[in-house]
Structure formats: C-alpha cells, structure tokens
Amino acid sequence: MTLSLPHESLDFSSTPGNPPFLDTMGGMVEDPVPLSEVRRILVIKLRHHGDVLLTTPVFSTLKARVPQCEIDALVYSDTSAMLTLHPAISKVHGVDRNWKRLGPLEQATAEWRLLSQLRARNYDLVIHLSEHGRGAWLTRLLRPRWAVAAKLSGKFWRGSFSHLYSQPGHARRHMVERNLDALRRIGIHPEAGEKPLTLVPGSDAENRVAVLMANHGLREQGFIHLHPASRWQFKCWPAEKTAALITALHQEGQTIALTAAADDKERSLIAAIRDKTAAPVVDLAGQLSLKELAALTVKARLFVGVDSAPMHIAAAMGTPTVALFGPSGELEWGPWQVAQRILASEAHPCRPCGLDGCGGGKVADCLTTLAVARVLSACKELLSTAAS
Image (cartoon, rainbow, N blue to C red; front, side, top):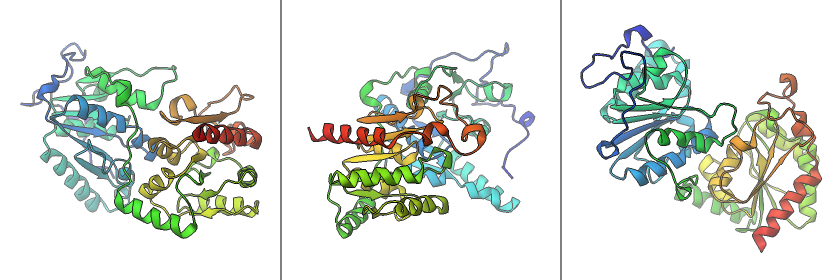
C-alpha cells in the first residue's frame, strides 16, 4: 500500500498560500523563481545508488548560487549514503522500500511521519529529479511556492509543478546534465567548476579501510580496484574474461583488490572468477559499505568495472576509471569528469539498446564479446598516464 489520495481530491487551485501552477488556459506559469526569496529547498531523487550520486552537482550548484538556503534531500533510505556528509546538504530524508511490506496501518504511520517531517521544514522550492509519481502528490501536499520537474504528460503531473524542464528527446545527454537542466529551467546555469560529483566517505569508513589495507598489505596508490559485479547481471563481463584480466595484470606486477556487494549472485560471480585464476587477489567482496567502498577506491591507482554504482563512486573520488559498457549508454552513464577509458563493442550497432540482455535473455553479446586484450590495453594506458 502507498499512502496517497485520489487525484481528483488534490485540487489546490484555490488553496490560500498555494498559488495554482496551471493557469485557466492550461498553460504553465512562466514567472522566474526569485532566488533571493528561497530559504529552504527539497530535492527529490527516488532511484538507485548511482542515480542518486549523479545528483550531487545539483546540491553543490544550488548552495553556490543560493548560499542563504538550506537544502534537503529525499531519497530511498538505502541510497542515503550517497548524500550524507555532503557539505551542501542539511538533511537527508529517507523512504524505506520495505514500508510496502508492512501492514496497512504500519505503512500509513511511517508515511505520515515522513510527511510531517517534511512539512515541518516549510520548503519554498521543491526540485523533483525523477518520474516517480510520489514526487507529484508529495509536492501538492507540501505546498511549496515553486516546484520543478521534468515535462511529462498528464494534467495531474503538470499541475503539480510551477516549472517543467524539457527532456532532450533522442539526444544522448549525460544524466548529470539532465539533472542540472532542472536548475537551468529556473535561471541557474552551472559552470564547469560546479559540476563535479561529491561523495564524502567520513572518518569511520576511512579508518576501517585503513585497517583493512594494512591487514592485507595494500599500499596507497599501489593496487588496482576491480569491481566486476552489478546488481544487473546482464551488465557483467564473463567470469572467465575477468579472471584472464586479473592473470594478465598480475603478470604485469599489479596487485588487485576485488570487491562486490554482500549479495548471493555477486558472491557467486566472485567465486567463479577466483576459480578461474591462480593469480593472488585481495578479496574484500561483501565486506565493505558504500562509504567504505569510496574510502578504498580513492586509495587505488585505477578502478576497473562495469556500468554500476561503484563505477560512479570511483569517478566521484577522482580515481582513473576503466569502464565496460554493454546495453547501457556510455554517453548518458559514463564515468563523470575523471580520467577514463570506456570499452564498448564497435561490432554491435544495436547498442545501446537498454535491454536486459539480447532478446531479454540476461546475456548481452555486445558486452560478453569484449576482448580481454582491449581491456588490458586500456588499463595499461591509464596506469601509464597516471605515472607520468
């Protein structure tokens, strides 16, 4: 169950203090947002870990351009580590994905508690950065003076926001820039220096990783961080090719730190990789939190992985990145503003297709056919560049 009200009961067109966002002719109110009057902002991003991390330039830019404001975030609770300790964020509110598994009364109580917390903040501006319907009805319930979201169809959606920003259609545009389009719509045009990703591991994560590195003999800038797994199996390179890469890197004198989430499928992939190589690795699979993963990768000479949250974490930490892409698009999701080499098939004009493997079969030929030699060469190039 989701706490919501029928759309027809959410008519705020005559509510005092909440001006209508649709005029009588059905067009949008085009008045610019007077930023000097904004004191508190809520940014909503209800997506996965990497998606949330790619919103961090929005917070940095807002704080730089509207320094008097407090900026809060609303995300799924399990993704909050992507934003906590961010210097521009005052509060991170969370929606627990497990609420829907509670009984109706317990879920309603949790939803009401969150709504009460958000209402108490008295937001002047809400920026909704996904297509989640919760953002529309929540904006109506919070009654900010201004609200921004992507331009989607539907009278209820369009009437929930004062400003709608256009999507680029078929043009391929990085998700960081698409998020920043919400700010452009209200008159904030970010400069290049305002766009880096921001992820702060924190002292607890840094201290634990320092202990782990000491215990395993890992030296700062003396190892390669390899994260071969993704929550989406069709984004993963075959275990035998990953193992061959590890063997080749070991023969080049490189030390490998291997990581994965504490997930049965990811652990199985790591086990299969280790079974296929005799090269020694430091296996930290399932042992690190997201903050600790960031604290580890910032110490590495190089990160190697597939399109996944850890790839975005490596970019946020400034670690040179070799990224393998299959069905997903590197122009939209590639490592952001970091030294990089992106490996993608040139023999499959159908990519990026966005499918969960060819024909939906969970195996993507464009990824599985990537040659080990190409990936190894990319690693050598970045290592050489970093050393010079």
